[in-house]
Image (tube, rainbow over all chains, first blue to last red):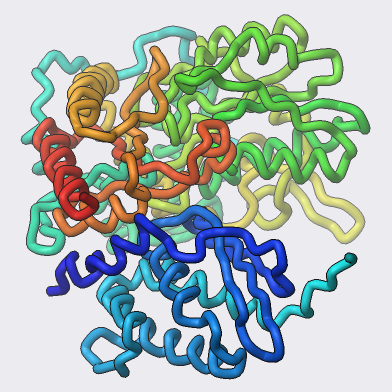
Length: 147
Length: 429
C-alpha cells in the first residue's frame, strides 16, 4: 500500500510553504486562470514569452499543498525554456501522473516528486491544474498591451 | 385501484410525532450493529464515517426492503389489476403515509415524491413562483444556502427580471433576523430558507421566520435536507407552505425525496412535469390533471426508493428523534471541545443553535490535504466548499473540512478524528 510520505515528500511540503515565482507579472503577455470547481482551487498563471522562449513566469492563487507545489515546481522547470519544449514537457508530465501506479514512468527530475499522486487518484487533478492552466495560457492569443 | 382513492388522514399540529414510545436508553452499540457498512475497514483501519451531511449509511432494514421489493412484488404502481401491481401500490402508498406522519403534514395528499430536495425546490420555483413572478419582484433567501436553494431561484429570477435578495449571516454563522425582516417587502413572492445549514450546522428559527413572512402575506419554503434527520419536524407547527427533504440523508436510498406542500397551494399550481400517472384524461386537444399528489408525479416513480425510505422512516421512529437529537448534541459538544484543543484548528460555524456539523480549518494546511491524510486513518470527512461557495466567501476561506454526525456515531469516532488530525500536524510541521 502506498504511503503518505510518497505524496507529501519534503520537496512538495517545501514548495507549498515557500512557493517559487509566487507573484503576478506586470509584463505578462500570456495569462490564464485555472479553476477546479470540485474543490475550489484557483490559480492565475502569468507568462512573459519572448522570441519563443518563456522569459518569465509567475502564479498566484489558493489551493492544496499538491496544487500549489506542482505550480511552483512547474514555474521553476519552464523558466528560460523554449515554448515547444515546454509543450512537450506538458505531455510528459501528463503521462507521468496518469500512468497506473504499478507501471514505471520516466524520470522527470525534480518533477518526479509528483509521481506519488498516482496512488491517490482523486488528487491527480490537483497536480495537473497548473499544467492545464499553462497550456491554456500558451494556446491563447497573446495579450496585446495598450501602452 | 386508482390513485385518487388514497385515504386522507389528518394529524393535529404539535401532536407527538413519534408513534413508538422510546423510553429505552439510547443504545449506540445496538444501532451500529444494524448498519452493515460500519463493520468494514478502510485501508486496514475500522471505518470512521463522519460524512453524514453528504449522505448517511443505511440500516439492514432498508437494504432488506429494497431486496424484497424487487424479489417479491416488483410491478408498476397505480396500473393494472393484477396482484403484484396491487402489492407494489400498497407498499408505495404505505411509504407516503409514513412520511405524512413523520412530518405531521395535515393530509397524505400533501406528500409529493421527488428525486431529492433539489427537485422539490425546482418544482416550487417553476410551478409556484415562476408564473407569478414579474419584473421587479423579489425572492428572498439567506447567505447560508446550499447551491440547490440558490440556483433554481437565480434561473427563474433571471428569466422574469426579478431580484434575488440575500439575508446576511453574522460571524458565528447565525442568520441576522432583523436583516431578513427588512428584506421581506410588498414585492417578495417567496422566502426560501434552510432549516439547518449544511456547511455551518446553524439551525434557523423557522417558526419565527414563517410568522415574519406570513405577517406580510409571503409564503415560505423550507429546505429540510439537513434538519429532517436530526430533529423532529412538524410542518403544521412551523406553518410553512412547502418543506423539502431528501431520502438518502434520512438513512434511506438515493434518488428519492419529498416535497410536503399545503394542499390548497399544490391544488392551485400547474404541473411541473407532464407524462403518465399525472393525468386524469388525455386527448390531443387537452389533458386534465390527476388529484394531489399524483399531479406532480409524472412517469413511473422510484418505487423501490419510496418503499426504502418508508423503512428508513420506521427505523428512525423506532429509535426516536428526540433520543437521536440528544445523542448528536452530546457528540457535538464533545467534538467541539476535541477540535478546539488541537493547535491551529478553527471551527467555522459557532451559532448558538446548531447541530451535528463540525466545519473547520487548520492553520497552514488546506482542507484537501487534511482529507487525504485522515482518509489514511480510515476517517471519512468532506472537504471543499460543500456546495455552499457563498458561505466560504462570507468567511473568507476557499474551503473547510467538515465532520458531520449521525445517530450511529460515537465519542470514539471523534477521538479517531482528533488522532488523525494530529497526524496532519506531523506531516505539515
